[in-house]
Image (tube, rainbow, N blue to C red; front, side, top):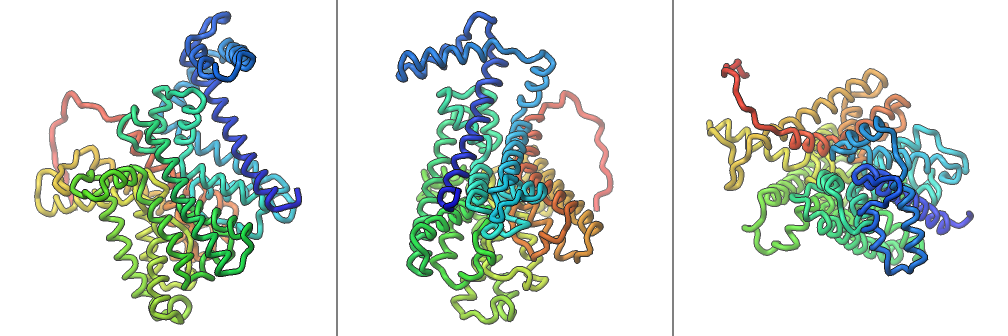
Length: 527
């Protein structure tokens, strides 16, 4: 396939077909046979209900579907295998992990195809694995430059993986279940709830379709603005400008940070028509879908906002403002970053630099030339991340804020923790503390491992590790130099950073139980 357009189309179609086939296989071979078994000669009621959904398709098509479903219903797995599968997929956290792992595996295999690279030679397995993990986990760290190393087919696969990772593999599974069966079983509902953080299983359909509408709307608007700017301001043909606009819009809204320019956004440092739409997409995607749903309904009545929305919006504004001021002050006279820019250029560059550590990964300034103070500020912002149930990573702004409320209550000597007129349950406080400490442990242990494996300096390694854990994608330029072992560590860290907070909170919430007795109380010395 010679044309880039043909390669892009082939890549997108292939990844859609692959994941649709996987989802359909799960729907047919897992949920129906295992949860509603029928006797060998008798179709189950569930299969009959499914066949009723296709009555409008004609008698011949209906008969073929019934025969196929009857064959599936008669197929049986060994009892031990069924038990293990039920145990594995019965927990939403496990199913989320398996879904993302499957997406990484499929993406790696597709990127290892010879025509996925510009050279026509198959990519190294570690390069394909690292890139697929970075795309699915919407990070943006790369070993090879995206725009020059990968062909149109490879770029299409990366774009598809970004969309799948940002949208949530379980959200896509829920949507597929809606399209195939017009209903969701309890396990599929709980799995989608674990990924989307919805409050009730009855609202899954509305949530999934709402997520789809928001994603398409934001990405479409940003893509149109970027396409017009690339074509009108930089002389790209409309075809190429459209592709650049769509790719960067999808990457920005999903907080992925993948770009098709070798210098990310550095050539557009002073162009607000490029930087601001991308920054807006990053902020919107990083707020989290529950917040976006509530803002759509109650935008003009902040008093009616839930505690989660108030904390997320408030912390987002505070961190953006603080980061903007701190980074601008630290880099204002740096001759390798903001120094040569005009006043307006410095303000714009400072704002973009404050937005992107919220797990976006684009950069309009050379990160490798920033001073140590700025790198430390980036580390803090990257570790905190963005809003829950969105496309951002990190420990999340709500976790960070809850820890602050706990500290404030302890300093005041109050017996309970209150936040914005609401009392925080003890279980939520423990979950926030657990997530934060697990994040610190992951970053510290990975930093120690990379320092032992590479000759790189502490500030560079810590920045790279924090960027991977926070699924940010910013780098001082050492990603390709950490070696195979380092790439494996960063891949695992990206996977943990994307799924760790989700699975940990879900597991903790599902394991909550009431203790029927208490041990004698004794206080150790603290501090």
